[in-house]
Length: 240
Image (cartoon, rainbow, N blue to C red; front, side, top):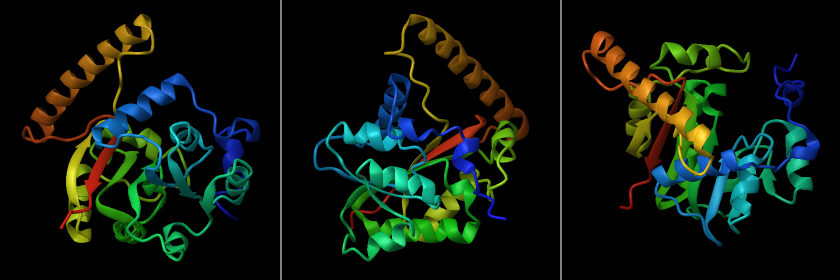
């Protein structure tokens, strides 16, 4: 049986909400793109692997960005095409056949790479290298393989295959020719979401900082590890 059968229903991704994003999404996406040095504007070309129910696609299209994407789920591909998106079922490989090599500013993969085995993750990075302009960015979020708190996310989905820690990300970057720009916890923006949420998030960020420092000191000899449930990394294609 296909392990992705009924995946969109399990995720509660309703067809009528495809491409919908909320202010919390906007603030988060803005923060993650900011850490990557990506400024959204008309004409910037972005490629998203595993676009899900299209929240990121809807957000960046509101800026006039040129959006492309891919998904293994045929139901979601049809929804995206109904939403008038440039999408493919075969991933980056199919896009590379469209004479789009070296034309993208960023390749985005939120909650996708954990669904692949390590050979396919490496292949993804090599294909992204072909897709990107010099100086282009790969931005990805995965369950943190550094953290005991990432286990609930990683083991909560039967389609997950690989847990990546920060050291493994650096190893993959070295093998595929990318420069590592950042590896860290997901952004947790404080502002633009109301004072109650700002206070709550401020407390969470303080607690995470203290707990992370303590765990890294006690268990990792003070070496930096990403102890939050998820890990975000930014890789850059060398300019030369």
